[in-house]
Figure (cartoon, protein in one colour):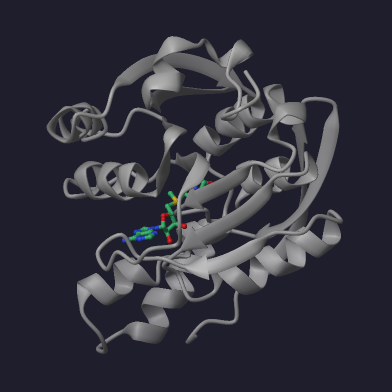
Length: 232
Ligand SMILES: C[S@@+](CC[C@H](N)C(=O)[O-])C[C@H]1O[C@@H](n2cnc3c(N)ncnc32)[C@H](O)[C@@H]1O
């Protein structure tokens, strides 16, 4: 990577537990560093791909992490996939509850920071590079999670297709979003795939988010009673 990211230690409170996380000290300073390093080199698309947004906590992740914590005990042994994980707070919460977690992102520096944060919090999970523009099969999962990944026009369809492809037949998809311009296009994408969905609005840690729930099981059951396949 062209940038030596400056990090600092932060705390996130989810349910009754506190997670300690190394995150970028300043998104603005990190962006300025990156753009300075890339000046005159690379395309706008490359700059977007290397954006430091992977290294800061976005509000929708806090809401999604609370949802995961709410079903926590029932995640024991469940297969969980997170898309565009960034700091991957929902994945860390799922792993702490005993889920078999695969966290994914396209940014080349996500895995190293996540490994550091998983060790800091005493949890085990796996990291894989996954870019929704170049789909690859990582298997089928009981829960597929994503937060704040609908920030560009083409993303709702890509993310929902990736999510649908990774969900087990009775799997649950949760997609949290702070209200980005194109987010509601996730609904048309799900309809086009015949994937049932339901929308909730929730808040946590002072952050509000829309949460789309995908899959028959997610549509049938409110979050408080959602459970992984075979444990209803
Ligand atoms: C706004 S950040 C959200 C990070 C994290 N989910 C959160 O809510 O804190 C968007 C994330 O999506 C990732 N991302 C962007 N485009 C992607 C793509 N085409 N495939 C996979 N991940 C992507 C970025 O690297 C970044 O980590």
